[in-house]
Image 1 (tube, rainbow, N blue to C red):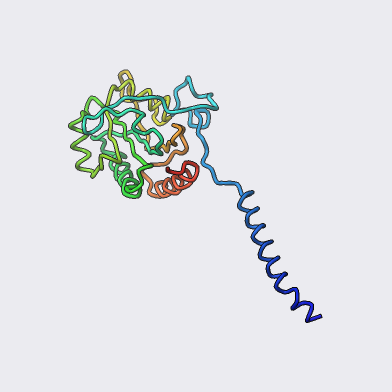
Image 2: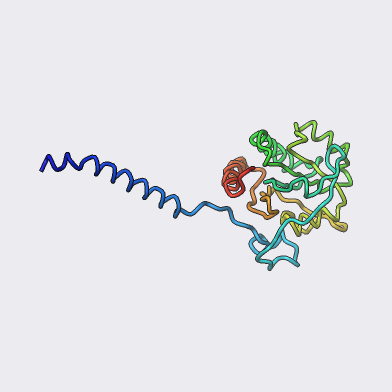
Length: 225
């Protein structure tokens, strides 16, 4: 009996190895890939969504836009074509949450500095104050790297519409006047197909770490060329 076992031991070892390999392949193939949700207006706090979109359940995408960055360059959605990017809304004279948000955007800038697929975009909610020279001054103070991070200003109505109808990121009530707004602390993760894939508290370091992890997941869905 021992001689028979020795005779077939090699075959048994090979058969076992092949079987384990096949099982591993099946496990990999059948294991569901982790995917981030695709956020629709109906999934978001109604206070942050324009009333015309609150019941929209599919096909939501970021609308085209045209802004001016800290260097006076015209920035449109084409600058983010094929990119994964993080957007937020801020203003340079904000004394409360903006300094922390900007510092955390700086962490993201450093984290993905060598990754051309990841970009940052910050919209000013006070364009009447945040002129191009003001944005440039702020960018220099905060260590903004132009190739990675755009601080943009433009027509207030357009910024408000983007915030409410595209990025789902600001409350409607403001300090008064047309197209006024109260911006939130949210960072918005946008995929290369212009869809929202996550919201993160830009003032909380723990949320920033979660955002970094989620970008890794999103990069698996959209590998860089």
